[in-house]
Image (cartoon, rainbow, N blue to C red; front, top):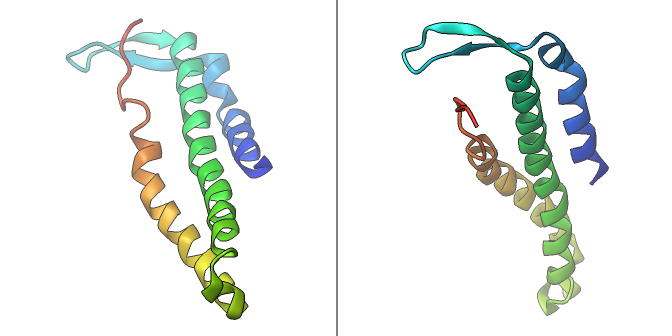
Length: 112
C-alpha cells in the first residue's frame, strides 16, 4: 500500500511548481482568464488521488483474490497456479482501473 502513497507523493513533488505559481485558467469559450494557484493546488490533489486510487487498487486486489483462492481445493492441490493467477489478476485490474482513475475527476474543472 505504501506504493500508492509514494505515487501520490511523487505527483505532488514533480508538480509542486503548479501549486506555487498556479496554472492558466480559461473561461467557457477557451479564452485565457489568468493564473490561479487554487486551481493548481486542486489539480495536483486530484491527480495525486487518482494515482493513489489506481495503484492502491492494484496493490490491494490481487492479494485478496489469492487469499480466497488458497482456500479452493484445486489451488491447494496445485500451488503452481498461484503465480500465474497473481500476474494475470494484476494485469486485468490495471487495465480495468486505468479508465476509472482517469474518470474520477473531470478533465476541465469549474468554479466552486
